[in-house]
Length: 109
Image (cartoon, rainbow, N blue to C red; front, side, top):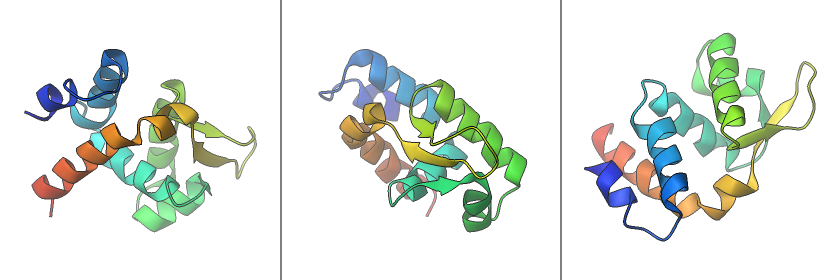
């Protein structure tokens, strides 16, 4: 099981549990994985993400808010067009995310 494997790596147990909850154990996990995968290349706003993922703008905003609440992404301002970017918490634990991403890719070719 992916969650069990995550708990054996070098990141803190709390971080692994957070990642498991946000990306694996919730219905929105696959969308959040896709958002983070795009943000790894550079910051994007909700409209750019919705276009790239061919998803509803409000859906992207919802998942962006969940990621922001959990300190995995941040925004450069509060107005329309604010860009999301990856936080240092996610950046230093990218190996945990990469493990989730590789398992997700195997399950969803």
